Amino acid sequence: AVSTVDTAASHGADELTGRRALIVDDNPVNRRIFVEQLTRWQVSVEAVHRGRDAAAQLLEAAAAGRPVDFVLLDANMPGFDGFDVAADIQQHPQLSAVGIVMLTSSGRSGDAARCRALGIKRYLTKPVRQLDLYDALCALVAPAPAAEAARPAVAQAEVVPQRVLVAEDNLVNRSEEHTSELQSLAYLVCRLL
Image 1 (cartoon, rainbow, N blue to C red):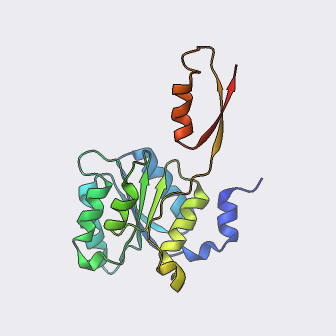
Image 2 (cartoon, rainbow, N blue to C red):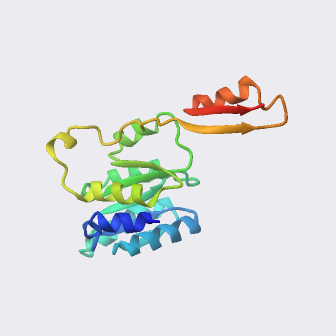
Image 3 (cartoon, helix red, strand yellow):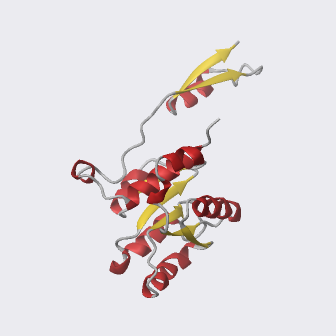
């Protein structure tokens, strides 16, 4: 089997080599996973656990002549969430070239519009596949063709129906009311009666 890391490498992992990243996530496990993954792609990585520290870290790196190319930003942090962090970053003109990838475990209606308003270039839902992350980061650092530049930075996610088998012995849980909730999330529901 070919892993997504191998697939990313075959697509020219050089695109990320030598880039600088900041990971902003309150979860230590998520930070460690992203640090390890980006390091494998030869990205220089720093990480902070508080959203309030992100802009200061970015400004410090820029002042030291080591500007950050992109930020992986957790949307769901307590107190000062990812959208607050993005708004804070936007207040500093010297950080305008920093690309932001918003990561969420709970995509909500209206998030895409908020991302566009804050200049967030990519929006991914956790768990993030390595190849999706790689593609998102490459899109941030690669010059966009004119046709792509004219498109909105964050598009509504394409809905691809997934199949779900509901094998439930409780008649209430097999009801149309419960399965219609899955269908509203673009799942094709097959019932085992």
